[in-house]
Image (cartoon, rainbow, N blue to C red; front, top):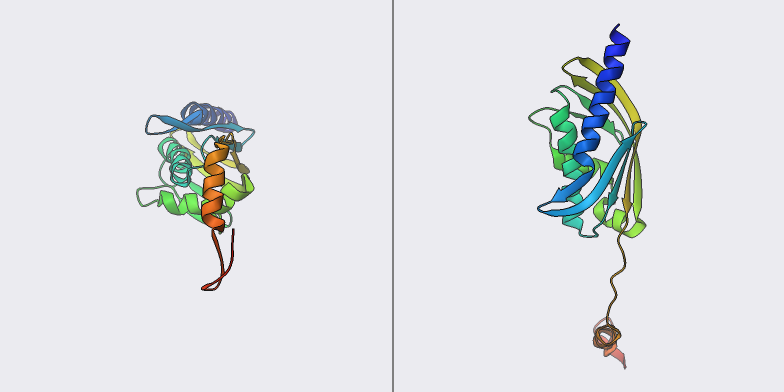
Length: 169
């Protein structure tokens, strides 16, 4: 029965995808963890480095690209992409991040994007539809009070309006 073949192909795909995205590494460093549950993909970033976030998003997308056959499609934030040799991974990552890019994600700490996909695999094809969620989970870094005070004093030493110094502190 074709529906059973498709259901098994979908379950196998999700299991394989989860194996790849469980620990997302940039170089040797794990920058994020991810899981796909009920067609929703949740990515938790452990870094606030914009380049590592962008590269980590690329790792997730490359995993999708490697598991799905050419011709598979994904629509995210209203933009359509076809998985093939010409796929621009950075354009797809940018579509996920939206107009505000990495900067908005860092400021807000999370983002959601609805997606739909038609995934072709050796056994046939299946559709996916869900939400892609990025979460920033970074522990604040403790700063030495003396370093903070020195940096603050440097900033407020000459308080200017335009080019004119209006106060000193």
